[in-house]
Length: 239
Image 1 (tube, rainbow, N blue to C red):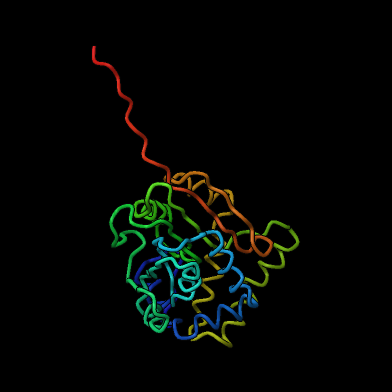
Image 2 (tube, rainbow, N blue to C red):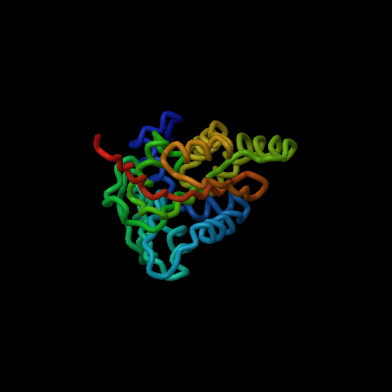
C-alpha cells in the first residue's frame, strides 16, 4: 500500500488517503482514544456557523467533520483531493467536491467560513493553501484550522512523542487498511510547527486576529482568524 513522504507530493498523499479510506474514521477513533469526536465538536464551536451561512470544509475526508458543521443549519461543502475518501463519505448526504487546496474550484469571497482539520499538514505548500482559503472567504469571514501541535507540558510532550513514534504505528497495524500511512502521520506531526509559529504563518497569509486554543494538552491546537476588509486607497488632492 502507498505511503507519502515528507515532500508531500500531492499524488502520493492522495493515493495514501485513498488506501486508508475504508477504515479511516474507525482508525482515527481508536488511535486518538476517542478524542477525535471532541476535537470535531470544538472545531464546530470555533467555526460558529449560523443558519444560512456557507462553509467550506477542506480536507474533509469522509465528510464526518462536515456533518458536524451542519448542526446549526449552515450549508456546508466537503472538499478533498482524495476521491477515495470522498467516495467513502457519499452516504453522508452533503455536497462533495474533489479539490486541490492550492487551486480551489470556487470563486472569490463565496464562503462565510472555511475550515481545515488535520489536512493543512498534508499540503505541499501550507502557506499557499492558507492564502487560497483567504481568497474564497468573504471579508469578515472566519478561518479555523484544527491540526496536531506540540504538547505544552514537557513531561507530557515526552510521553506523547514516544507514543507517536512507537506505539501509534504498532496500533495502526491492528486497525488500519494501510498501516504504513500512519508512519507518515507520525513523521509529519513530529516536524510540524508549534502553535505560535503556525499562528505567524496564518497571519502572513493575510488573516488577522489570529488566536489559538490548545486541546488535549496541546496535542491538537485550534487556530482561528478573520479575513480583513480590503484596505481603501488614500485619496489625495491633485497639485
